[in-house]
Image (cartoon, rainbow, N blue to C red; front, side, top):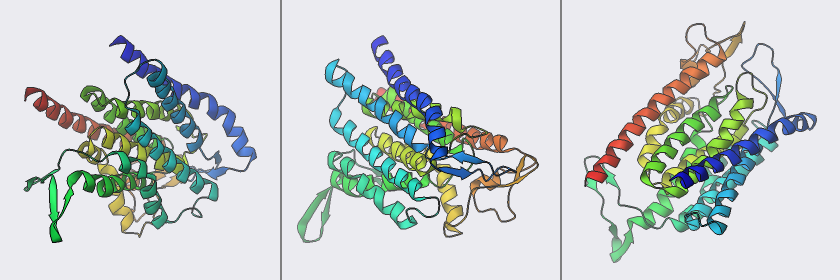
Length: 345
């Protein structure tokens, strides 16, 4: 047990240290290269380095590579096939997000492309996840393992899950986390809470591959928060949001935690609804005034509903993160009840 704890802690530390060391060295390079953006929630529109997804990307990869090294040379028990498939999916989506950041804010990948590209990135997971327990729907119950189509064609639930539900999950989570963003520390904070919750569940259910991916991403996110918290010295951009969303989907899929993943993303579903009313043209920014952040008259983002009273940007972000924390506690409660039920059976 002590060996496993040391392995998990080391993987987290490898990704954390990588990002923690890289960002201070990367910020001046990004500034000199012109990769900066305005902090829209400040009275003085100060410029902040962008492309923060790159160090997270690298930190995550180093953590994953270390886990592969342990598995290959030191006998750490890790099923490399699904693990590598999940890693590849996250890397591909991180690459898509970074390309979007390089092209430029509002000039990059179009909305329909944001929905389409992650489907291609989900191909590695689609190839290895050919079996999963049949789904149970409310008021309907357990779905059959095999569906009979016209002309006597039989198709298993595993095929439906791999070819339809997996790409939908990866695409949906990647785009969801890309919407609720725009405040210092918000994107990385939300992702760290959600992935941390999934990591706890994966630990207690023995889903090692999901746990290792979660730890590699958590270490990178926590280190990034050091420089992204108010006042931010670097922005994560689409590289961060798309990659964190893909990580949530991959961890949930590999850990058989799809339902818990849906619960954890409830704030993002609300944001999806609000943004859809403006045909996804609305922003999550507030109106800065004397160090405070006020909501616009027409509230078009979930962040605007947290901008009540006289609140600073930091207070607003803490409100949202606390709400997400409560959702995480609820998800953990649901997961623990299911886990106890399985043990008793």
